[in-house]
Length: 161
Image (cartoon, rainbow, N blue to C red; front, side, top):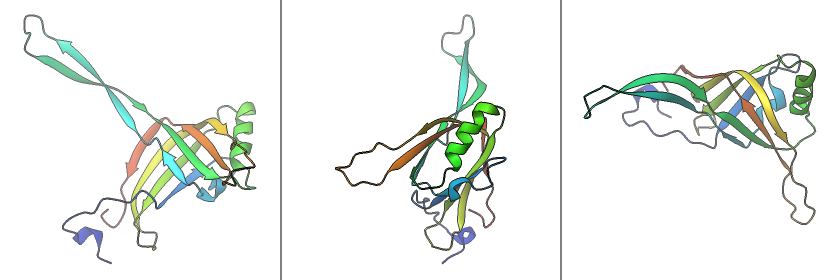
């Protein structure tokens, strides 16, 4: 395998090889052993304020406004691990308890080489959905967790990714 620093053409990252690390105070540093099949909602949006100058109809001024963050949706095959359910119930008695989370994107090299790491702070579980149950389908039971977060940063990865 070549060193990512030496790549002339940087290949796009793959979306299938990732891990989610959720550190919940009082529950554990790696809730659910980071076993999620889907992760969506890593996003930031900046509001833009538009100002028009009187008498100048051909120009507008754009100012950077406040940032807003998405809502992370995680899906996994339901197991006997009940960390997420425990956390959601704990939030009813300790509503100020927040978690931190990191989403790590790996290279497809089977060596768990990190390509990107996203850090989410002050995560709050806003929805925990049990899987739909249907005896005739024979499908895996998938549960869903939605997290609101207060900030999102991309942490530099050693190795030049």
